Length: 68
Image (cartoon, rainbow, N blue to C red; front, side):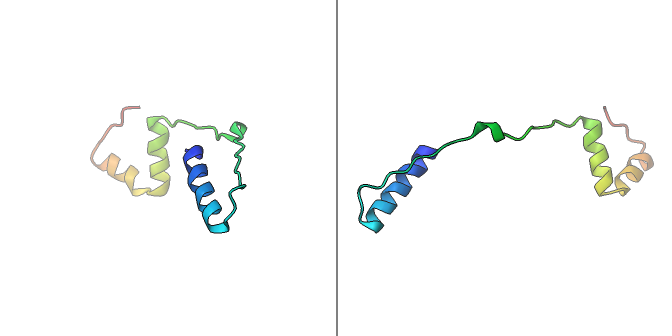
């Protein structure tokens, strides 16, 4: 993806600035990858209940069970 963007950007700059000596280099820092936390079904349901407390009431009203 970076190579494609680099080529398009480089071509644009060379044409508009009328300078064929322009180069672009990218440095990618892979150490800043965010940690992905997976939520269990129970955690997902609890998060939804936090956002909408009526969900817990509906679950109890219809006697629904959630497969944890």
